[in-house]
Every structure is written in structure tokens, then in C-alpha cells.
Image 1 (tube, rainbow, N blue to C red):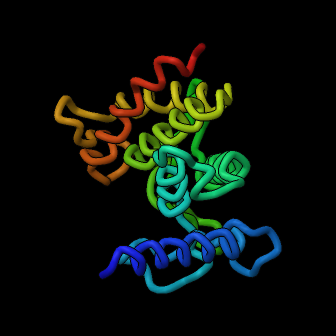
Image 2: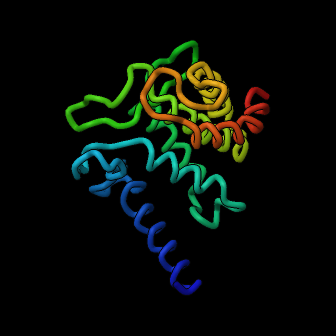
Length: 185
């Protein structure tokens, strides 16, 4: 694939994200759906993975403005939506984040939140705090990263509260924990 076509595809993908799941009033607003392979196609089965990783991608760009000129508002709103839609708790100020929610309102997969999803969300909150100085994101990151560690063994595998292993996600969280040292400032 030529370099031009690759970047044209990225531009097309970002246009779709901005015009549909991020655009209030579109028929696909907040319909972050279609990630999990064990779920039949259901646009009303929403998950936190897609918006979390969209936010992660934006926040790890050297200049998020080049990807999304409205990145501060978009990522801030995504983080709020994830906590409102999938949040479990708070548990001493920490929000556990669950995996997905069906249109009938039932959740998957844990009353305490999935630790892989919680640590990933906390890492993105830490990145958002670092880029914007947003105090609430810093607090959310600090509390939820701490909460996540209670369920991780020394090899970063999940020991409880959900069924997903968290090796790769915990690696993202550990990288972001350095940023979280400034979350409380």
C-alpha cells in the first residue's frame, strides 16, 4: 500500500468517527459497537473499548490537534460517557469500568468492573490529565489505577473481579502511571 493511500484511509476513518459516533444528532451518536467477536451484530450493544482506544490514539499523537481539532471536548466527553454508561462504583472514589452494555440495559461482565477495562480507562484519564491539566481526570486516573492493582498479580495478570487477563492493558496502565504521579498536583 502506498504511503498516500494509507494516509487517505486514516483521513477517511477519522471523518467517519467525527461524522457518526462523535457527532451529536447523527443516527450513530455514541453507538460505539461492533468490537467483540463473541457478540452477534447489534448496533445497540455498546462497549467502552472502541471509544477508550479512540481517545488513547488521539492522546498519544504528538499533536492531537492534527488528528481532531476538537480533541479536548471529544475526549473529555468520551471519558464522561464511559464512566456514566459503564461505571461501577464508586469504590472509595475509584470507578470500575465494565465491558459492554446491551440495549435492554444489562451489562457484561462484573459488578466490580472489568479490571482490564478499568486500568485502560484510568490510563487514558492519566493521558488526558497530562495533556489538558484536567483535575477530575487526574483524580479518576489515580483512584482507578490504584483500584486496578488490587486485582493484579505480580505478573500483571488478573486475579479477580472479571475474567479478562490484563497483561497488555496493564502495560499501558504502567506506562501511564508515571504521568499519574502528577495527577494529584
